[in-house]
Image (cartoon, rainbow, N blue to C red; front, side, top):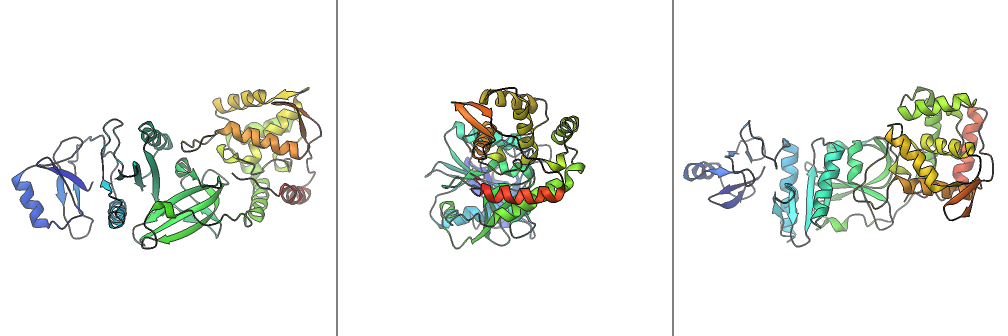
Length: 391
């Protein structure tokens, strides 16, 4: 932590107070945590960022995560950057109503900023975002760049819980913020297309801290998805080649069903595995949940409603067979992904809508006989789909 109370006044480690002066303050009065009111000790060494520390047995509600040097340095730099640009930031402002302490609070905008470096359960992350929302406070999570690994020009490996904090840009495409305190640089990963639970397609754009004066200046580049088509076709190739090795609950469940109908998951229909609108609300791979939806529709004896599809997927999610993602910043949920996939199947003339939210099957889904045929069909249907509606 970088803030403490001294004689009922907030003091921080970002000023010009010397090590000797901190020692004098400790003699004159107790330095305490603004939240728990327990004693804190100024740590003013030569190697690490100066900070205050609780005693080892502290159970302070606001400072339950151990702060690394990387985190302290980043928080300090972000605060100084905002202060230099006259954004009137407040460091470690405690919100007693929700027992949360954003790293930086901007009262002019009623905006909380969190620089997240430590691992965090996605349920806790979700809860914290909702905490700010309950007070009508805007919030943004800026992740430490060390959490991100670049696999190629378009592929990144991320911690899957980071996606919980994803937002949509004005074009409706997902993005995440990262910051490196060592390089003094933001990295915005935009046009995000989740591929697996920890692998994404996206474009990483770097900004020097000196280039910008506000987070609002990020995400101003024009979106370009031209690079995605070939990468997605290649991903379908990977899914087919590795389907037999996939041991996830969803994969094993679907394999068993397909086996009894003389089909193989490797040779799933080219209509499945498509990145249709909002598909990423499912953490389960698109080729699996969409293959199941196709199977389910094919087995229905007559017209079906959207509520039937929704009920069936609720059943599988409740049993832990399919997994969904939680996006507290987004308005829609996995049901929007189901609806969008039905819209895609309409365009491909596999189903037709006969009344509002009522459909019937109008064709038989294609299934390849060999891997070579599957790869060719994937290219044809992907190019034909063309729109690749990721938003």
